Amino acid sequence: MKDDRFLTVILIVIALLVVASIATFFLRQDEVVYLPEDTPEAIVHNYILAITDKDYERAYAYLAEGKNKPSYDDFESNFLFNTNNSGYKIGKTTTSGSSAYVEVTVLENSGGVFFDRYDYVEIARLLKQDGEWKLIQMPYAYWSWGWYEEEY
Image 1 (cartoon, helix red, strand yellow):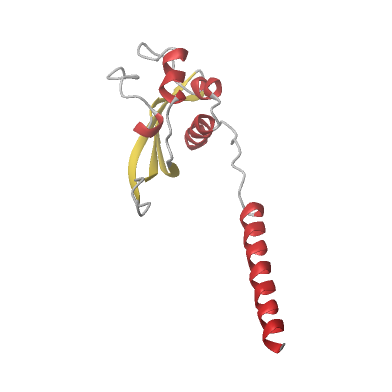
Image 2 (image 1 turned 90 degrees about the horizontal axis):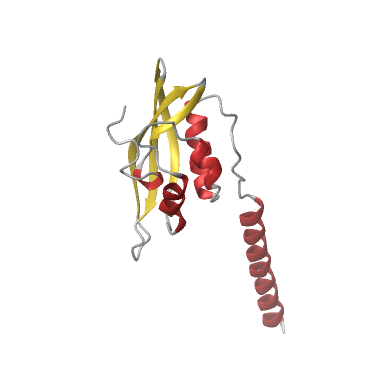
């Protein structure tokens, strides 16, 4: 009889731990929000967030005007079937006049058996057009190679 109560207590404790861990998981998820659009790093963050949220119109609005700017349809179709599972960290920003360079560390899962992750650092380039920062280059996970190629 003591063994049955002991086993019952153990099972209740395990159940409580499982419920607590699930509740913690759902309650601690940070909601990512758009930042004020007054710095190059905020533009990079907002662009990636818009792509992630599939808000392609908002993401497209962050692109600079230029000869090789993709049409909206080409831009949207680049991401429609993209199953990109990458994350990012924004690093150092360097500005020089109307140009800015933002380090972006892309965090990608290899999709392998052990879910290995690898990181690489690339540069986002921005230009100031009509007083606003606009993108002319992003890491490949969030960009297409033909956009703005050799234009600036």
